[in-house]
Length: 107
Length: 185
Image (cartoon, rainbow over all chains, first blue to last red; front, top):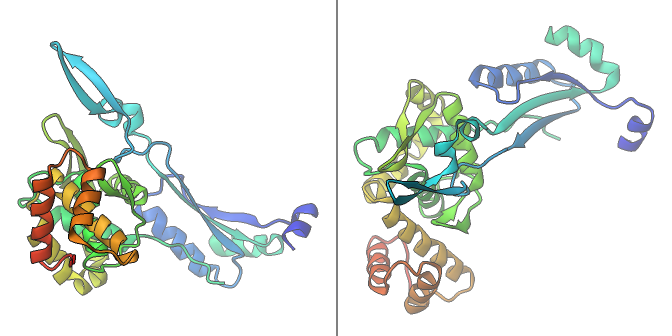
């Protein structure tokens, strides 16, 4: 079945997705949309990816100041690294044949 | 097949609850302390936080909990601030109480257990908790191997954490045993 729908280009269509880093309202809206689409949804996808882990896996950097060495986590020194938040995107997919119907419900 | 999103409001609620309850209790409520307290909540007090832990640099550690904290902070659930003298600090933010209310059902159900953890472990430093959570981790591992000999546990903890003295490990194990947290032979 999955092979056939890919081969015939009838794969499931993404009907709704949140930003990569959603806020509380985005998550609530995704749940609300999912509820509205009950019976039509083929599957939901929860993309989870962390570009950098700032926990105990943080990269420690040796910094020398006034001839004294101190060890600091990279996330405390780099605003770029600090801004790499974990991805928590939500996506909702429906069968190709139900796409128009689902769009009407969502919009 | 159940099609739904697995939002982690209960886990965010636990982080929010700890941030509020430990504000004037913990000497350094930061990332390491959070990791160890949630580990103890889950493994000893059976609060279903659903985190997988591995043994890492400072004892039991969950990558998922670390990511949940970052994401929760991005939603304004807590503030995570760097301090030169104390490392990372987790502080209540504008929406901390809001998120605690959102997980009210879960937190009410496990309120006694969270309070017990705050009362028994909340005043400890990251170093104290690193040792105690590692002892608990080794004890749980010993339980699975059906060999909970006190000296074996001390020896294994010493292998993992050579920067703690045998006396420190022994004292911490005795304290945990007295509190009924572990029951070595």
